[in-house]
Image (cartoon, rainbow, N blue to C red; front, side):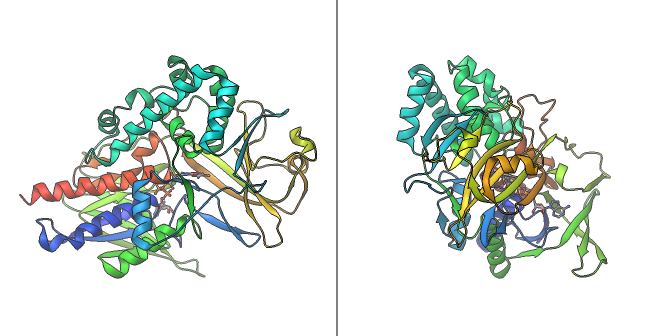
Length: 465
Ligand SMILES: Cc1cc2nc3c(=O)[nH]c(=O)nc-3n(C[C@H](O)[C@H](O)[C@H](O)COP(=O)(O)OP(=O)(O)OC[C@H]3O[C@@H](n4cnc5c(N)ncnc54)[C@H](O)[C@@H]3O)c2cc1C
């Protein structure tokens, strides 16, 4: 019997589910598993979700998830599947490595090259050996624990995931409290770790300490290589889905928004609206599935879930963090940042939190065909012209991209950031974004997708025995 599975969302999580299930399909003839018919629904005309790039001044710029780490095993597997190339993100300004500067509104108080050797010497000098040794020890330990995620097998709940990985103490403690407990100085938390988190998550040191470690790894502090995908991160998912459509049993419906999921005793109805291009008309469809995977954050999905069984575990809504992305072609003003005209501006400037500035980071993100530098600024609100005129000595009309909800507020406090389950109804309804309550990255979503596909596979295995 062919099992019909709907996947809602063609981002990292949804694409991972489709990929893993069609990998199973390839070997279905030789195994005891039934094969799957997978239908992906995507409300946009493109895949990738929050891994998305836009064209600015003739250059493709990431406005969502941009940095991938070489330890991101699942994303690397998807890249190999379609033979896609890596590029180095962040540009150098001095013909050497990318430089990171830390800014407190008055001066740039710390500059490191984005290289392990530079981090070590600069951090030792700025924060002392005890803080540095303790930070390095606990960061390595956290990363090692997370890497076990590739070996633990499928888990139905976040509670189970954090237990298996032995990271509950990290997820349930804020970065401030965790570092304090482990002899990492407050100066380090405030002046180094928090500005990086401010850049990655637009949030402060009350973020859970697991997500904090993820941010620091994303800035290169865990070693390994940082990269982006040639042509834009989002197109990885489009290419994977295109190949799956050609080779396997996957259908992708773009421009199709799922409006409602109706769960009855034996079947699930997915009600979707196909948005007709160049026409206001919407074509409403009702299709029947055995299993549905919600592969988007419920807070961003606008989906009604009607449970006629009374057995579906509820999805708990979280507070989401808005992020404004402002792209500017121009020249940053050395004077504004307290630098002499001949001094070199760092390629990325991280802003200290809670100092009343409107923006959280500014970084070079590309160079146009005339050699002008293109900058990306993250902020919580729209930037005003007055501020841009202060930041840049000259600039052209900026372009904005707004994420109403970029990721959950990742506080350690589960009353603010509650946990939902991956398995909302065994063998029937699954939710990948449950994982975003502990951290939110492209790989973390892929891990959730792989996990949900494994849960579905386990149920198939046991029902066929
Ligand atoms: C500004 C920003 C910077 C970031 N930086 C990084 C970074 O440097 N590195 C990193 O690893 N991560 C980063 N992230 C996080 C990362 O991009 C996300 O965690 C990840 O892409 C989420 O993937 P997902 O598949 O879970 O969800 P999404 O990418 O949100 O995918 C969900 C998909 O579902 C679709 N959808 C939603 N509702 C419906 C519906 N009703 N019907 C049909 N389709 C629907 C959406 O259109 C979307 O395509 C960043 C995110 C943002 C916003």
